[in-house]
Image 1 (cartoon, rainbow, N blue to C red):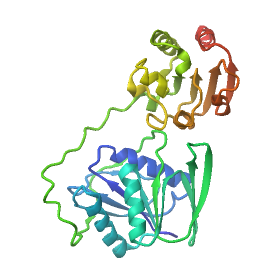
Image 2 (tube, rainbow, N blue to C red; image 1 turned 60 degrees about the horizontal axis):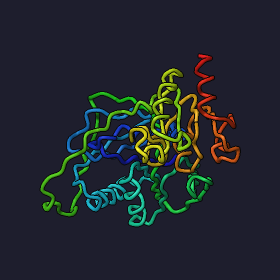
Image 3 (cartoon, rainbow, N blue to C red; image 1 turned 90 degrees about the vertical axis):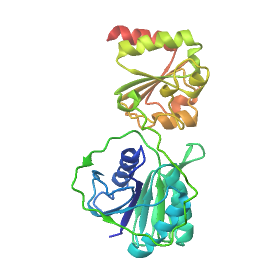
Image 4 (cartoon, helix red, strand yellow; image 1 turned 180 degrees about the horizontal axis):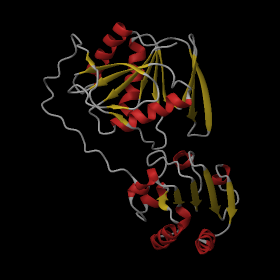
Length: 312
């Protein structure tokens, strides 16, 4: 059985969100039964932990400057001391740490991984490539395997309350950060209503104007759905930025997503691909969104949505 270490910043505003993403990766990769070690960067001993589905056999916390270089030096020492075969990271900083740590430990790294199949000698990873047009499967042989997991649909994760049995790791010789006079964390963003919505009406540039967006918001309310939008709609200031779906916005997993007037660009498709049912409405029968949809309707979006609202 391989030894897995999960690397997280316990002081980060999105600590639990990143833990949930890694937990989802473990489930998809059928690694939930594998024992894991938690290595946490923290200013103090952790008072609570994410409730992972696998067995957490050890918790170690490290006080280190918020510098990538300093944290890399710490992780090198921890890897030498505890020798994990698989190291898991999340977030933008996680991808950099995974890549650079693999180089320093003569291992192998890969970022934005969705799931993996692991044996004693090989780590085979799956990820989206070419703007989400293709799924790649890559074989990694050299250990340790340093993986940064892909950002997925917003999933929740519980916490393990105190008392927590955590051992502090004391690194030696890490780089001096005396030049860093002050630092602060951004406040944790409010949870988007899109992340918990069971039904979502996602609109694209085909809505035409801001006035029609307001009308579709009323229809969405009648349908019991949250309104979401593609990048062109947001960039035209037809709706708020917090309604953005896709690679640079929200990634959702509703029971039903109605994509109306959406072309189906890969960046947008990434935001809705976890939906259980996708219904596409577009007047262009060649629109790329139909390749993503479970149900396709070639018609005027307003007419279809008005009729649907009448039936409810």
